[in-house]
Image (tube, rainbow, N blue to C red; front, top):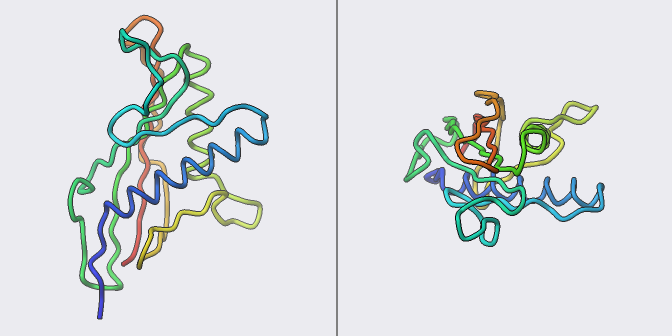
Length: 157
């Protein structure tokens, strides 16, 4: 019997992979890990005026991930696009943060596997991850710099 694949589980898997990847990078560099929020900024990363007080990321599921982008065929693939926004205090930090996110999302080991595994809870597995768009640095408010990259994550139920 096949199960219904929920893209909400896939969003959870992407968030978990980002958190684990950023924690590993932070540990290697002896610095605090950069937090990730889904749709909203993580807690305690902005001041009263909404300006960032530290580097953080916000993950947005784009295509079909808001409900059940699902399949009942166990061999059918589901591809969901995710936008990952890096919010930083300056341009160089935003560019660096974007590069760190790319390493976690699509970085490969020397043997060809993904550097940071991604596994949805329950049934299903991630088949592929790829870059949809490399964004450039923007600044809509003083002291706030953002890079919006997009990635495709393809999974099977």
